[in-house]
Image 1 (tube, one colour):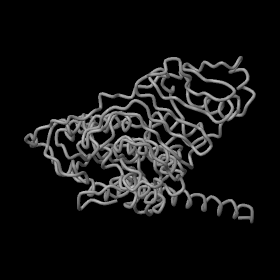
Image 2 (cartoon, rainbow, N blue to C red):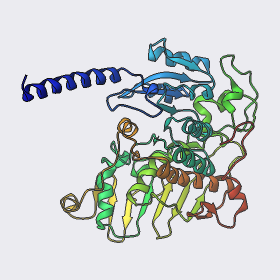
Image 3 (cartoon, helix red, strand yellow):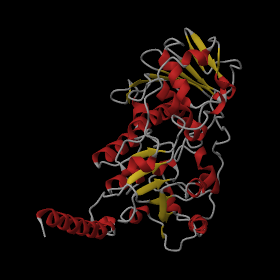
Image 4 (spheres, one colour):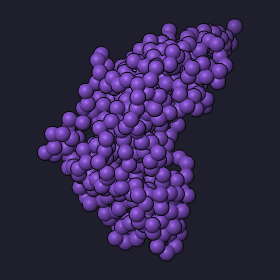
Length: 425
């Protein structure tokens, strides 16, 4: 055999051996290859904590497979298992057991908000990537701790409100992208005022108010009420305080503002370019609030250091208001404007920078998701600033760098609120 033939034979032998080696490695389980290893072709595994209506609604998600479910209500668990239809899916009543499963890639936190920060931070510390429902956290302090946990442990985090990058944005009949483009163009001038009102297409859901005359009731046998309360102060069980109507109580959420605020405000933060800061003041116009039950409000106004404002119009006072108003022009619902040939002029300006909007891709390739622990914390802080002002019944000044209220001890006590033992973040 000549030298050329020897080389060809050796090459065939090398390729054959290499293919055999690759075939061997292709069937090695992920956990054997090391924590965090994920082939791009792999289907991500997901566990859901909290399978009420929100958690059950997100069971199917492209590129993921549910392998575990957790809820403190046995009826919720059974309803979720009926949807999944896979008896191999593991079920838990305590999330601390679930987050230790080595086969789980993503933990989806779909509990009431008073649990969001603790569960999401514990999941990050357990090496899981996190998909969290809004609002990100019930307090500003919990948001800080959660952000630190995610970053210290190198996890990918998604906050589940998507309007900064997807879907028509309520009354604007447009995605947020052209609104961002319009603001960047400077055609409206600066500073800008954004009004969130029923007249600009938004619903503050003021039916999320609490009752002030709840009577103690028998805890249903299927519900672990102590675990449902978790870090929240102990209160006698009442059906109106849990499940579908919990949003009306300060201990668990913040009414219509807590429910919808991050959906509405996060895109504003994005198109105003405020992802790394917060307003310096919040002004409140509202009836006096009950110490336990969330009520309604008339108007909340946030002001940034540069004069930009976000106005939350709860009573629908200004009927012909523009969604965005600047010194050079206005943008109204349905993307109508007082700027002639707006769309034609916009075409000459560059599009906003691309965003990572596929969570599965972000997890597989370890990329920061478009709405993450940092900008999500900032938009949630805006919501929580409003809720603190509402609870106290007074306007407040805020330091966006140190994230504390200025000269207001009562407001600062609500940044980090006590948790019922043994729970902590």
